[in-house]
Structure formats: C-alpha cells, structure tokens
Image (cartoon, rainbow, N blue to C red):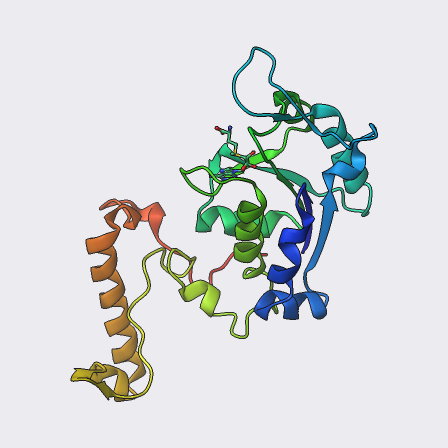
Length: 246
Ligand code: SAM
C-alpha cells in the first residue's frame, strides 16, 4: 500500500513513521509513505499558497492553482495514479467498515491535508477527491487526520500485524462489528481482582462463548447502535472463512 501525503508541514511525519508497526512495515517494503510539501508547487518568490477569502470573513484559504498542480505531479510519480482523498470536516465520517472498504479497493492513496480555513472549493470541483472526516470536531490541520487514516489502513494490509486474526477480532471489525470483550494477562489475582475462571481452564469453546457474551453485553450497554436491528439478516458479520477478497 502506498500513501502520498500532501501537506504544508512535512516535519510532523518523521517521528510517527519511525516507530513500531508502521516503521517495520516501511522497512519491509509492505507500506510506502511519501511526504510532499505543497509549498514546493508555488511559483511566486515568497512561496505563498494561501490567500484571503472572496466575500470576506476570517482566515486564509489554500489556493487552487498550486494544490491542483501538486496533486497532478504527485499522481504521475507512480504507474498507479491512485485515488485522491481530502481530509475535511465536510467529508464522510471514517469508521472501520470504511477503512476496510478503502483497504480493499485502493493500493495507492494521495492524502490532501488542509490548513487555515481549508481549500478553495475549486480544488474539490476539479480533482473530485473522496472527502473524509475523522469526526465531528475541528483540527488545526489535516495531518493528524491523515495519520489516523494511515494508521487504521495499514492494519488491513497482509503482513503488517503479527497475527492476521487480530484485525478480525478488534472492536468494530469484520469479525462481529461489536466492542471487544475484556482481556487479562498475568498475574491471576491483583488486589483482590481475579481473572475470570473460564479463561484459565483451557476450554476453548467455553472461552469463545464467554467472550462473545461479554462482547454482546458491553456493546448493548455502551454502543447499542452497533447491534443489528432484530430480524435484520443482512447485518450478520463476516468470519475469516467467509471473508471477501482483499
Ligand atoms: N473551515 C473549515 C471548516 O469549517 O470545515 C475547517 C478548517 S480546519 C481549521 C483546517 C484543516 O484541518 C481542514 O482543511 C482539514 O484538512 C483539517 N481538518 C480539521 N478537522 C478535520 C476533521 N474532523 N477531519 C478531517 N480533517 C480535518
């Protein structure tokens, strides 16, 4: 999977990219991340990329010309032109099924990170990006949103996670679309709090049953919106054996 991130603040990314699972995947060649400074596509001597909004109002707007030129050049840097995605509060809200859908259908994603008051509308009209929001709140810029996209998407790439099954089992994921069950590790007892007996017995079907029940209970209490409507047969989750092609 290849990401091209278009930003005005490329310095934000190296720390994030140099750690943990992501770093390992980059080293192994499973994931590529290329960071581009949109300012490099300006033509004036001050590298000015923003301007005041027509009609007045606060803040500055990212200008259409350098942004469109930058996207076109970056798309041409690989045989696969990829899909352009704009980080914006006006976009469709990111959720796990959408992450899975993006990971299934796109090998290369070009992520546009806004700043200030965002992009000139003509960037959207001309490039027709997929507009993505990471939630109903306002960030200072699209960089954190792009990192959220990358972080969630790389987990879907075969070879990135030590255990492929964990991306099925996680909360919201393909396995059951519910919240995850409680997890425990050693010691068996801490300050009077014991690990549930069923997890210690080695009876795998009993453990599976307990986990499913706990998942269901937790989801009912905290996120009943995730549960399928009664009688909605199409809402059943996939299992690793029935998973669609990726
Ligand atoms: N004036 C814009 C509005 O009201 O929609 C907000 C601009 S925001 C201060 C600057 C940039 O941060 C946006 O262009 C976008 O790239 C990014 N951003 C802010 N909130 C976001 C969110 N919830 N999801 C994705 N990107 C976001």
